[in-house]
Image (cartoon, rainbow over the protein chains, first blue to last red):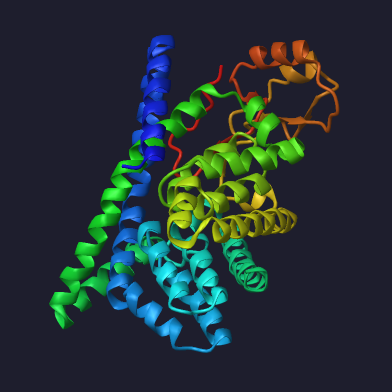
Length: 160
Length: 253
């Protein structure tokens, strides 16, 4: 567990303690609500997780890296951004991977495009985000994130 | 009919299950591999989701709507933008962990723009990620990407807020604001018209609300109490049901 997760746990537990001391009924109600939220989301979250596992097996990150390093910059950027949208890789795999890419001589642009869409745009999280915020919001947020991810990558290519 | 509807509602779940069934039939070893790599994400979820749910519920319970509106609402301007970046950056866990939190904040008056900022910064520039980035790609790389990403989020959150209105987000209206008469229950005693003729009138032997601008609350209260079948109701705010937030009746009072 990293420091931040730990900090959120500690903070929430303290908050819970204060809440309990102040108003038992309210706290009980809050916990009930938390449980209800969990119940409402658990199936969706599990299907996201298993979808990620599935995609990672079909498209292992190392293979994505190999693919990206063999392409021209233009193709690699669009490809990287697209591959980034369908996969969701934890930071501790993504960063070393992109690190090796850059060190191996792959340009910065496709690497950054991949890195940014990897986390900001999500095809697998789309169904859940849609349920939470509606189709219009989800489509526009993800669409704009994708375009801006490419823009960020292009600018970084110039700056670095 | 209902089965079709259920499948439609959970289409994604059905697709994932089918994908796994096909994979296990075609290539069992790949299926096992998929389940194994899902294991890490399950662990990640179990570490963060319970605490996010409890935190969201506690914040919903204790932080008054006015405060959220003041700090994250439409009129919070630059302060709201800054705070949203802070909230997103000190977060932990995958982006879907931000969903219940953001629904709750939106319900309490946070603006669409700030919701987009929280979601996006939660996804790409949270501090734990930045630390990892420095380790593998160097501080210069991290800093430049961070600055560019922040600028990008500021721009596209503004665009999103221009396109998406609050009504576009799901939220089922349970009871509406204002004055209502249950015309099925009204038995046409016309007590309300006698007590408050400026507001009520009779139509086809049932009471009807006239168009009004200002309400005399004392008078209205008397009318509501006087109605023998209790068919007049007045709500000050809208009572909404939001996705994933169970019995989100406001508990502030």
